[in-house]
Length: 166
Length: 198
Image (cartoon, rainbow over all chains, first blue to last red; front, side, top):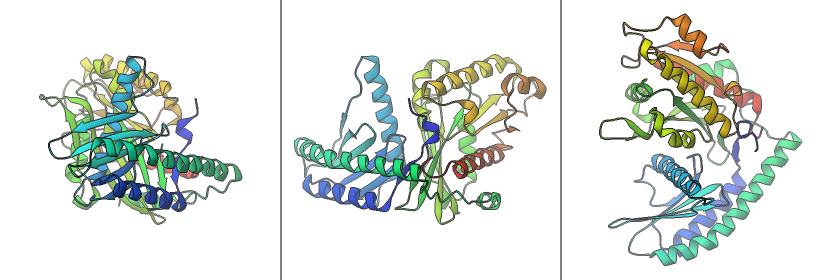
């Protein structure tokens, strides 16, 4: 196993833009209301659509909890993971899928779309997203190796930290 | 694992409050929630049973302000303390950046504290972490109660490595922010040491 406590998950502008393009395309092509991407640890990575009335931070955390709990269930019955979850509501539905074993793609849609359409479009978008996250992993590893990680925190002082709490 | 987002200039870190059942993990978060300005906090989510025992986790997002142009956010989680929720506890530790162990200082909970601390170590190891290498602080809660174990005894049994420790009464808020600040500071120092990708 890797040493998770020594790694940060880093997102750069370039990859963020590429991700935004993919999820916005998915939003249009699947007729969805909202799409967001969440790290498995519950951090919101990106989102698009009608997000302004949504508590996206809470959604991200609960989605990750949901995926973690379902993953636990999967292991108990000898499955690696359940890669797709679907929650059906009276008006809105949530389609949750795991991309590249690492990131969670959430699509919220209503009667203007259908589960079949969402599944179809998600499959295509997942491949594109997986590629981007692969590139991101390579880039992060390279940055680390060459010492170009350029951490915004490398030069913080105790005063900077204390100021946060003043 | 912290999440550094250069696109939105944000850094997100995850703090987990661990400890035996009814030690006051949720109460810690509730106090932080009550005392934090509305613009610095998100909604507090509690996945609890009908009798208000934590079933899965509590979640409280906090925005602390900016460091070097990066918005600093902390996501506070509690685990369910009851022994039989161990599967859930393991899940919540995933991606943790810092841990607060909330001990119940009452004499009769001494064994429960020790068991929970052992459980924390085991569960962290399963995820590939070592407690000794993580930002970690201990809080001796419920100091207002008459039947507390002496601090020396708690220290000896729960804090052999001499990590930062705080006495607290989470109900009144005493020690709550001190504990949170200490672990947040340790996390930021760890980030400073580790660099972005390290």
